[in-house]
Length: 150
Image (cartoon, rainbow, N blue to C red; front, side, top):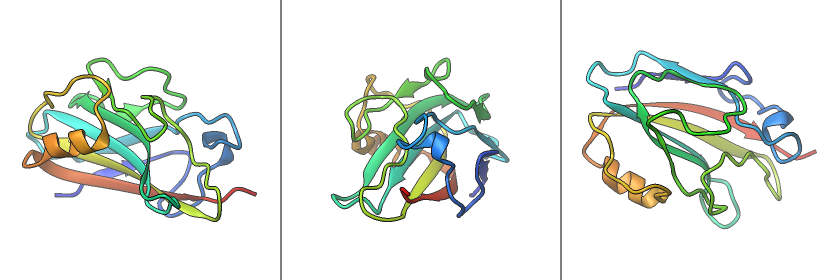
C-alpha cells in the first residue's frame, strides 16, 4: 500500500532549495505524511542518493518513529520522542543534506509504515534497519527531490 509524504519546501521531482544542502544551512526540510495503513505501529525514514559516484549514499536514517507522529519540523536537531537515529554514510545520526560532487543527483525521502517497532540498538546502519523491516512493511511513501551545486 502506498501513502503520501510531502514537504512544504519542495514538490515531487523539483529542486531542493539550497538552505537544505551543503551549500546552504544544511538543515533538514519539513516533512509531513498522511493516509498510512491503519495498523501502523512505527515509521522508518530513509533519505538516500542513488546517484552518488561511490554507490548509494545515506543522508538520514530515522527508525521507530511513533505511529502518532505525522510531521518532522524543519531544522530537526534531535530525533522525535521515541525514535532512533541510524548511522548515515558520514558515520553520524544527523541529517546531512545534498552535496553532489559532479552533477544533478536525485534524493529520495522514503517513509515506511511498519506493523512493529524495530528491536535495534541506537545508531543502526541502513542494512540492519532494512533487514529488521523485512516482512513488517505495511506501506511506503516516497518524495524525490533533485539538487545540483551551482
